[in-house]
Image (cartoon, rainbow, N blue to C red; front, side, top):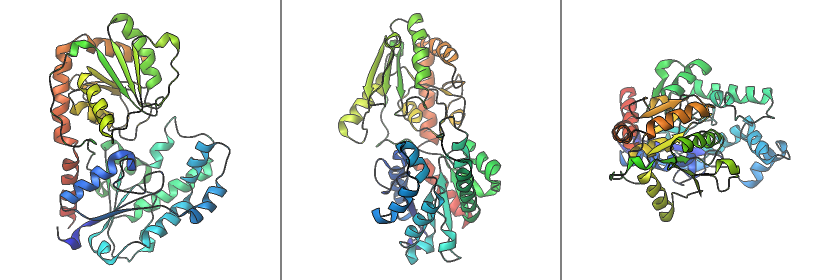
Length: 385
């Protein structure tokens, strides 16, 4: 692509991130995505925005509540805040940005009314508000009227953009069913694993019965069910071990602690943290994450890249990652008995675990790397051109 045909990437808000190359932005995916866009000649530039303290203050005040988490959610569902962010973005758009088109992360920027009519606008998503509202972890205390306004705002954004890219087929269906977007306007390009380079896989003892769970949001990721299931696993397989990564602190009941090792939060953007995480992945026999709600989920793909079979919940995008009996298995959310049954069965067959781990790695290398994602993006852009 020539410089005049390349996209300008946009992120913004404390919810998504304010620096496209910060390791924390968009749950770590932003920098890998935009770096690969640049490497493949798709990107003109990428930038992030947030309101200054004075601009942000009125929105903070009008959403204030004693519950800080609820306060945060109310702010990030404030359509006035969305409009102010959109204005901040528009003020930073240069003529060259409009020649190549804009690619925004998420649906909280409504740029079409603020830009010349010929501007081409794309969006890329791991989730949307309609799906978030269906989650059992959507915050209580948000009024139906506020949710309706935010959903309607997203609908206007999706009506106005030229094309929508999603991480999953599951999410594409949501745009069609929940927002009435024409199927031809939505393309699944997937997502990639957030790792530096492709790691080599070394042999391991799958008979060691080492189980790995990763999730800062422990309960939403199904961590409570994993602990209950592991108690049954430990009775059937006394040498099994469960390693928990994510929460800085976790109060595990005494009766559920046997065989459990807490590793706390591991910062993978630091060399020491990367080394610790890699050691756990290279030792793991099985990765488990029976999430109650998951917009997409990168952690299982990272485990599969290291040759670790996965047990995930049969919801959201997970069935697009794991085929039961091929890459691991799927279980119903909130069902620790079924989870325990599956874990015991898989851990009892080390040869099958090794075959599943190898199959999962092949699938990730084929479909879930950022180079593969950007190639699909380029193909869609080329077809549109």
